Length: 131
Length: 270
Image (cartoon, rainbow over all chains, first blue to last red; front, side, top):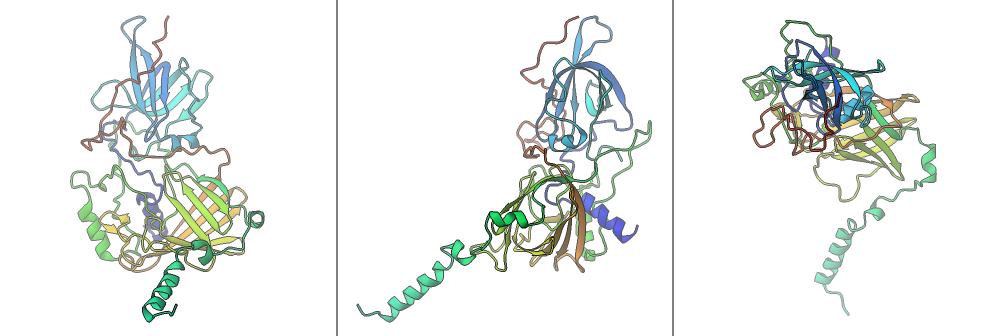
């Protein structure tokens, strides 16, 4: 590894002003698999240190019933660079969510990508979940 | 009244200490708000260039590649720093110990990552860099160290000068305990020289060279570019919140808190 690469690696790994190194582990997510669900936006929690997306997903075996799925997302400061905003998703919007599932098998996970009904997509960033 | 020697000494002492009573007198600036329009247009909001957190596509079934060791340091570091770094890693994960509520320090590297957006503000005699993660750096433009500046502080004392269209900032008085790499702070007598300039109208580059004799055998230079972000809404990036759904502040353990928000609308009706 040459010196320039090492310098950049150092810059990326170190903790300078303003850096957002993962403040928690991603071990709870299976980052080697991508799940996908379709549902209705319940709420986008626009908060530090991570935004959370809540989605009503129809229960597969019970007509008219829903599970509430939660998806961790990046920080609002980072999400802005990906086209997200506080009101980019509104309650009632129909979306597809691609996500890293929780390792414990329960519903929810870490958002990878959201596709809106009109075909627009919103990438979900992550810190160190997958390399 | 005859001045006694003790009275004269007291007056001399008062005069000496009053040099610091009025910082404005000690560091007068001839700059005016009107003159600020002639400066290079560094002012405004900037965000780190690129998307550092775009991840590669999933590799079904493959084990995640472990992240590189945070102790893989550039050659500028003294050898014992890497050794201390390895000793400081979490023995279970091999990763740097996570710090939940970390105070912000300037350690001679340009802002980056989440919370790395910043705003440059011009006022007469001063350039202020307000970083989204919370640190505010006040750069005094002039020849003198401002009166009453602290011996050491989290942002240090920064003195700037214009070299053509480049703002050159020299910073000293950095907190020796400011974390640089796991296991090591900056140490005493660290200094930073930054060169801040436009690459083009919408691209800013910061080159920062850190000299830290306690931990570096040679100066360490970092360089980052930023894009202008006039519509940026700053969000007080903060990893130190009470209701963190991803981390239990009381235990320091990861979690995935599924407690629904209190104001959710009802599920859709069919």
